[in-house]
Amino acid sequence: MYRLSIQREFIARHRLVGGDWGAENETHSHHYRARIVVEGDELDGHGFLVDLVALRSAFDEAVAQFAERVLNDLPAFEAVNPSLENFARIFHAMLAPELDGRRLALAVRLWENEHDWAEYRR
View 1 (cartoon, rainbow, N blue to C red):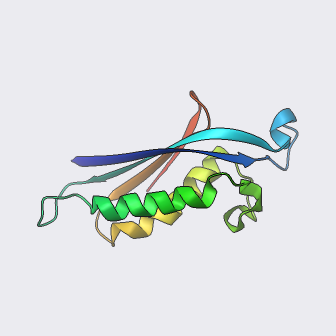
View 2: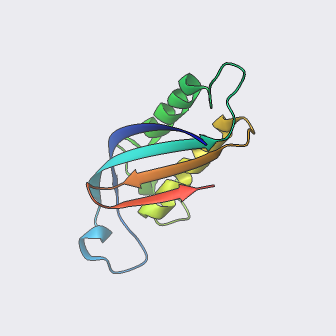
View 3: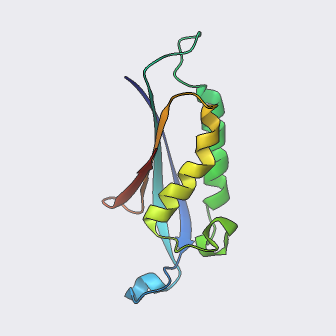
């Protein structure tokens, strides 16, 4: 099994809704760290698991859509709480098309601080 990983850091803001979570209900910042991991059993004809340049570009574009923004204001979070779990799933949905229908697994792990993370994989 081959694994390839890319990681980026960015700052975004959000506020949780629908419950009483104290300070989390107020708009606040997180220094997020996002890591994607692609896994697969076979390399392509060039010896690559995936086109790393294209995947980096898609990852950077996804990060740019969230960086320095209030997540609650973005269409992707219109109907969902901007929890860490939902954020990881939304990030995954943005990157999954980059795998070109190949039989590859994609996992997105998203930290909101040094210790706490959520992961979504398919």
